[in-house]
Length: 180
Image (tube, rainbow, N blue to C red):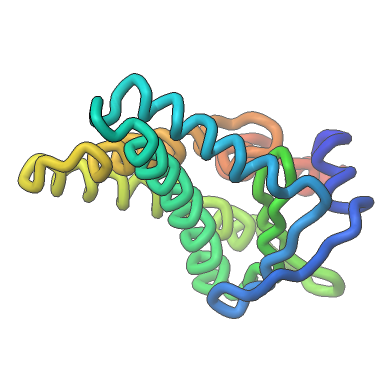
């Protein structure tokens, strides 16, 4: 875990704002930067790819598509964590990204359980994305197509084996596997 992620996960005070599927949702200071960034990106997309007469509304629809793709990813992690009997405790929104946190204190979590937790988000995104893209062929709706593209990219991007990404858990060699 990098220092910035560690700061938000370990050091920043959290405020619980609710619960989704029996998982606490909490925020740190500056959490609003993340949705504000999505809103700004949505407005940029609305200007370039949206309805020429309704650019602001188009931007909001693109923002909703990004938020929905992020929600699909989180729900995927929640579901597969339960399936491998190592449930998620907290979904933490920070200014830099959303973290899935697991309180494994005193429990032995196998490598397969860790991988089971990690695969949920990418699989949910890719499945929802491909489903939305196929449906958009029939329905011909630009925002459905955008959700399909965004969700698929998030799912595939999450599989890249870099630090802090799901792919690191799935394909990279972690510290617990090396005995460190």
